[in-house]
Length: 304
Image (cartoon, rainbow, N blue to C red; front, top):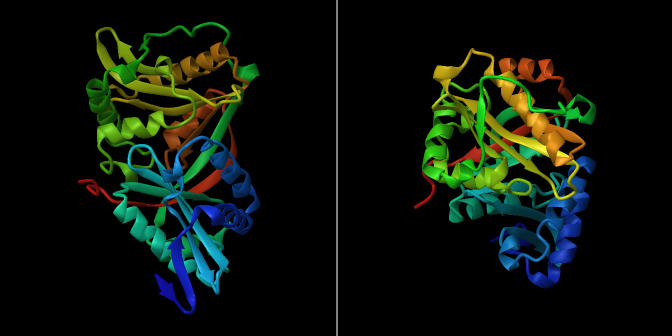
């Protein structure tokens, strides 16, 4: 692909270090550190991890970079080019073509609210605003030191039962106020794979939430390699079982699990439009420490 004197090509291995440096320099400071962590997590992986790394060259000089980082469950993270670059739009178009070729169902980028130029570039590249996320955390001081009392039973290793888990996940998505734009986009297998790709996977931290002899919800936790952070990846309740205060019990159980893991904090993200969930988390002692806007594109049925 070529335009206006420059050429858009997949980055060659010999040019990768320079391309990633250029990509890093073009990102906002808070995203630079996240990119470094993402690259650290790819150590030891094969060349396919960089199949979505595209560069713009002009007279054999790199003038722009975009990286589509492929993820589990037909998902991807798009690391956008510097919006001031001469080839920014063309690089975004190359990333869009690559997403289609790779049959990606959900691609996304997280931005701060003041990153207007990058947001405009993402929209020009076929992505739109999906949600406004609030990031909440609770520290060690608020963790219960014993299992909280309640009516709920937590059955671990939910991931060992993908059919049962997949049906329950779809059920908990019904009438959800958390990122409703994503409902119906992915099939259960992709949803499960996407959750499993976050943090350090352990089946012992995937729970069916049960009352008596029936499943009423799901809780998925993960930790990160440093061992100090536990993340509440997902919790959801069957819509027929909502309104009974069980959300608070699930959160308290998650905090207790973080204590058992030896974590120093529990973190999670929630759609700011989901006011019932925000209230529940705040009542449980979690506080907002950051906000991000999710830009992305959904291609339901993109897979063959």
